[in-house]
Amino acid sequence: MGKVEQRLQEKGIVLGKVPPAVATYVPARQAGNVVYTSGNDCRINGTLMLTGKVGSDLTVEQGYAAARQVAVNLLAVLKEHLGELDRIKQVVKMLAFVNSAPGFTEQPYVINGASDLLVEVLGDKGRHARSALSANELPFDTPVEIELIVEVTEA
Image (cartoon, rainbow, N blue to C red; front, side):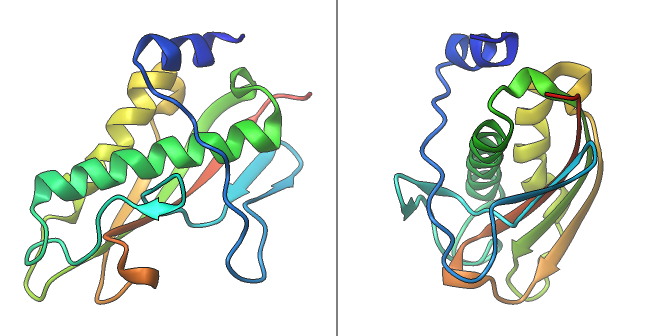
């Protein structure tokens, strides 16, 4: 077991099984030493933990929790793709969307749920550039969708 997985275990974070794609895409694609993930949502065992718009149906705190779960799911994708999370050299970029009620402007605070989890688990390797954007709708009414660009070491 690698250092990252030990940290996950110490924090009681369990990486779930990566669900099959719901359309024509792959969960991750690697080009050289860079891995691009597809967008992920806040599913736990195949079921969305929350649905709805942040700012009307959900609070910022609930959105934060959903974003945190998305980061856990992204780590599961990376684990499946890389075989070992210790191969992560750095998280380069996060692109995040928040299913936002009209007038809601606190997307960065919601997406901190994912950013905080990556730093908590990966340390400085988890610090990243980021965009936190509003969306008027997201697939399946998920409150948050996030994708990552990650630099990795050779296998």
